[in-house]
Figure 1: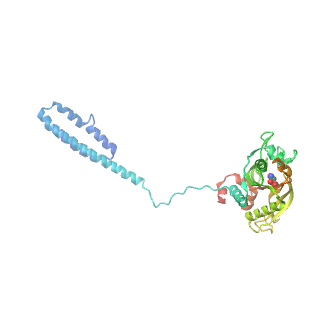
Figure 2: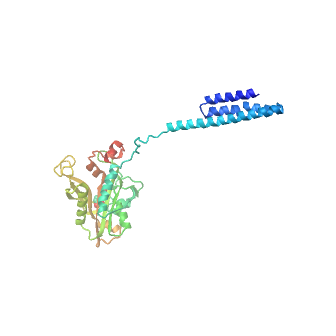
Figure 3: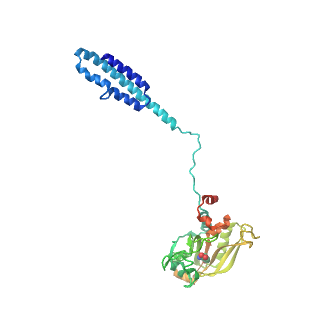
Length: 340
Ligand code: DAH
């Protein structure tokens, strides 16, 4: 029996030497010390021995078990350390490697243009108000003095949702909302989306953006309108920019005008951007019609105002030399990334 114990010890030694990892070591442990393990069997068989033999063999058996347990402990520690070393090696971080930069998004050119325009007006004391894209026919047309037979009301020009509700065709209804909410002095701009039943082509889109402006107070004159818009044009397009006010018609302003700026590309000599004329049309404006002021319940003898509306796409196309409005909506990153 003692020979057997020595043989087990020797075998345990040689097997443990060969074991590569935790699983193999555990297998050896079970084989030796498990319930059905060799050593366990021997210890169980000791009952059959005489008391003296039991004493000496028992001592040796315990010693063998102790040594095997120590060997196993050492082996487990060794394979754990080896596994950890391997893991550290595999997970090693190269601190000299350049970091990976998260890819930052860019602002859309229309956002950039709207922010730039808004900033100019905010610096002149305007605040920003907003209105909904789904509007009432009343706010979009009636309250803005558009006659019942105005051509813009036509189904072919306007997206109607019901008889009384539509997708706003202009940001001008925000004028009405502002007049119903605020008392003069009023000095606001309102950027936003507009919709018209247009077939898309290089210069038309059924969805586009405008920036509306409204100033109402006692003693506001056409001189305030001209001064404000001239200063705006110089801040946006450069200090040498000239403005020209051409008579026009809008239902909600009287008198009305369209504003041209001297071409920022050629300075007025005539080029491709200004189509040879030296001037570029950028917005519509006028003195607020008394009928519109009346919607806000204002005394039209006391209060006057001016308003303007500017096409954002048009300004962005001119500023950036974009020759097709549809490029703004295709979300091709090769296009959008150019305006960082
Ligand atoms: N709403 C007009 C349009 O869509 C633009 C406009 C012109 C707005 C004159 C105004 C204005 O406030 O005074 O064509």
